[in-house]
Image: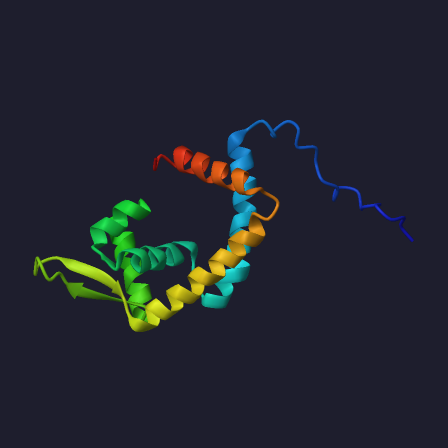
Length: 155
């Protein structure tokens, strides 16, 4: 019988001292935890990918958006946004409508089912984020958010 703390050779964790100074490594490791939390609390239960969740949150917060606005905001090529909107429309979560000010332009909006799902997912995301960030103080959370916005170039 193995003693407590014994592990099989080759399964122990490596010393990360040689990469701990790299911001890219630290951001990637934090992203692993964030993606895991997203998948457990939102992705699987709501059958959403992160980009789908983000699009729903953008529409919930803005009411509607043109495909071009979505592409710019999500930093995605327009054809990828079209596919994304098509998938969400097939699920009955979004719809396309002609703009009331420019009949040639399309607007993407949440359907009533999309609004309901987006509201539930938003509430779940707040709880999930609270759990993810529970080790940080309020000030550290604000600082992290500010630094991430700056790093992402959105400031």
